[in-house]
Length: 119
Image 1: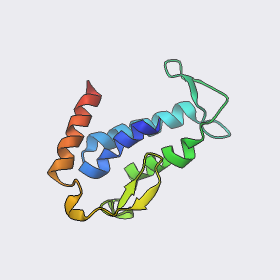
Image 2: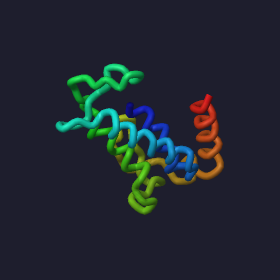
Image 3: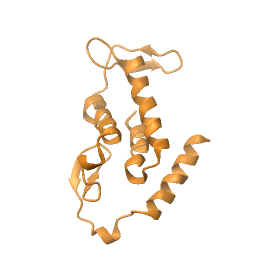
Image 4: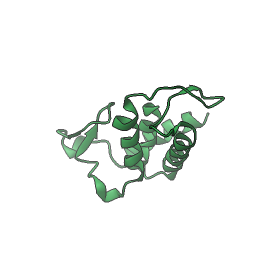
């Protein structure tokens, strides 16, 4: 599940509302199909939405961080100074700003990712 949220976080880099809408749908489906009285269950089968009697360890550590990143105000974090690893842990960027993929470069890459997701 977290890998999908990584894709959704492209919204932060591009401002493309397609990614924010995708994140909204993911959040609503997560609550609708996975929420239990005790937390968030894994699904045995996504086609039937049958819940298992378990919760993955990454649900709160990663999944909800990605939701936050999608919906938090733009001023919440300076995304030019912070990088997130695949476990959703943040750390300060040590890469000079002149080398960061910003502007048109990252938007072109995100558009390619978005188009491949739609296929």
